Length: 194
Image (cartoon, rainbow, N blue to C red; front, side, top):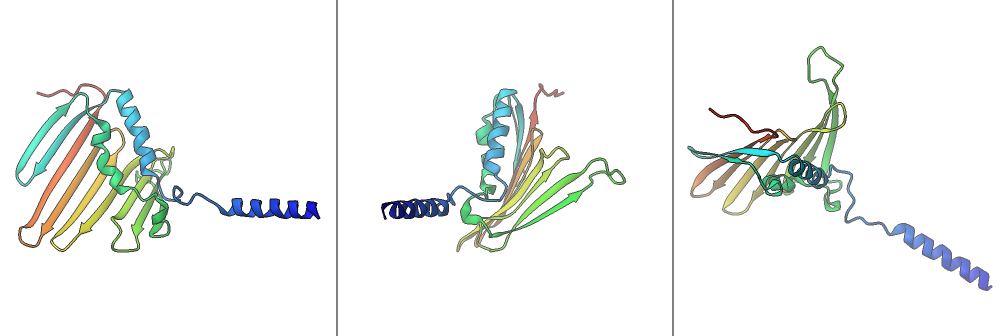
């Protein structure tokens, strides 16, 4: 009898532990946080520099950074994160293979597109393109937010170790629409200017 109770107890513990999974950290969607962490580490290690252009209306500003804060520069792209378990099943996922050079099948790239299936999700779309070696070639996406007074749409593009851009459009009920754009060019050697 004691053996039967002991075996029943082991069976119950095994069943309960098998059912207990960590759903808070798991998602089958692309993990942009992980990608950005590794890219930021490389940008710091290789002492990458940045030329940033900001435009708001007709005002344009260019700034050269020899030691940029890469965590801050790529912070915008963390807003494209959909890898939380709370987003699981809320995005339509399409995967396609394409050839970037016409009539040349030697280079194959893969595009994974995530499209929000609910209008109120903060990330409306995310697209990740991988090169033939499965390295990230480009990340782009769009976020939307709105309330009674304001609607904000932002478009993001990051080409690893080359460039990034953020374009924003803000529409308010009484002030109309304003836009701004920030672009960054990443350099690993001192760029030449005349």
